[in-house]
Amino acid sequence: MYLFTSDDRGMTEPYTDLPAIGLVSVGILLFGYLMTSAYQSYSSSAYYAQEMDDLRAIAVSMAGDPAIAADGSQGLLDAKKLDNTKALAEMTGRYGHPGSAVSVEIEAGEYHWSAGASGAGRSARYRIPVCVVLNDASTISGFLTVVCRECP
Figure (cartoon, one colour):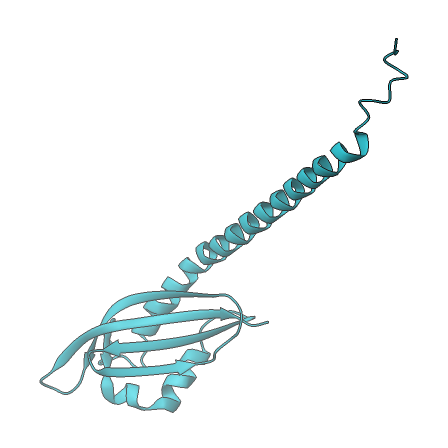
């Protein structure tokens, strides 16, 4: 008769520990991956939400900036002023906050203007509708897009 404490027939301890340790390790790695991806998603959306109000204010200010606005009108841009790339670049340098690079893109039909610095970090953009005066007789609708990038 065998006693429960001295019976060696049911000894499988080393072989059952390895799969259990493997399952626990996979579970810990999966939990770490999910937590990291959730934090990155939250960080990205928090940055975008924080920058949205600032970008809207910058876009509205740029749409009425005398360097590109026609007759000082808000949202009515002059194509002749937009063709002056130096003035457009100087205008974009006045906007933004330290640690960020602001650029502007204006698209109106087949016309396209862009200026500003580029960065390599996270970015957020805001787009507002504008009208571009081509000459005294024609106006074309388009969009002014402000892009703000983090500088590393």
